[in-house]
Length: 591
Image (cartoon, rainbow, N blue to C red):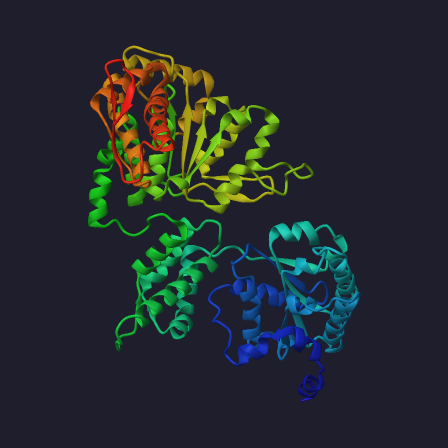
């Protein structure tokens, strides 16, 4: 009775203004059900019941459920399933945004925080504070406000008058709280690991009813399982269960919206596994739906499709096609990159072109290829540009070119052009990427490469001629002299490209001219190139040691330049159809 009167006499105006009473929300059934995490909730309860150092600090990655543990404690208090010391207590979550908002005058923020601390201390232990992102309060802000905030909290924490549950990430804990020994010893660390796949599925099943009511849909068990498994495989930059919850939430909204645009029906829309697959595809830009009959035919005829664009490199096309099929069907090792290749051979024979085709075939766009010229990373100091400069050096905050590119878009082809020119430290880093599918950048963040296709090109053996099998054997020996055995062993395949012959160059010419025709059509012009001019272009562009690049220059000189000159002179106008030919003197003419 005395405790009830004490609670009724509590003045919690500031706490109510800048915080949320989680216990009251639990009593009103406004919190999501708590599935699992009982070990962490029990640990927090034990720490709060201690006489000294009774302030738990929840540490875990974003989205693993730190806030849910505070909500779970509030629910246990509301249900009276806690020790006597905690029964009837109130758990208030402080909103730092509301606490700081509008505090423009000097000292206004500190005054608000002092009022919060005073109300908690005057409650004689009846109020437990929960501060999410506690590092924003302790040493994280600019302008001195955060430092003042930590100084306000320290005396109350030291005297044991303030019971506080903090939550932050491991990086922020080390960066801000661990550096202050006086503050660190007041907090007791409670680690909150990412839940396993099975635990995440159970969490989603527990939340199913809330989301079904909110979206007016139904979720199949397969949809919940797919949201966990697919998010774990393809959305590597976020954490379970948060990313899986985001999936079922947006899938519910999408299915409900789709149902509302159709004719009125008494049936409740159902979120299926296919809906989750389509949503993951739209998020990541890669196909994750089950292989359809049509796509099965496309995958089986992948070599044929690639051969239309890649002339004279049968072994390369077959190896790449096998890797794409393995990845698409889902029988590859998910902890490693989708595939890893070393393309070697003469310049201009299609090594980079095949990498572009892989990006188009698997990721749907040529823009999904990220190219790094290894000649820029020949010196030891330049390697830091890939992974980020060490702390204290210029460029540390910018991160590395490679790691930031994969963090921002994890699903892509990464092309390391002329890998033999790179410093040895690059090869050392590649070992970790090829074997474990991950890399740690200069800020200590782990970047996943398990949704990338790694392709390296090299000109080693490009000057070798003769029987192709002998050339391959010689290239293998040269590779051993340039790369360590453990590096070569981690590759899925080393592919030696052939030199291009005259007939193959003629086929490549037709492909290149097709690109010219398409560009010209946008100008409302029709162009035809005669066989005589094609013969001249191949003769001009046939230099075996340089591959197809001289052919591209010949097209620029004898086709594109002639057309451009005709347009400028007024000889060619919009809507015209022109033919390019060669006269008896060997000059290119247009009529």
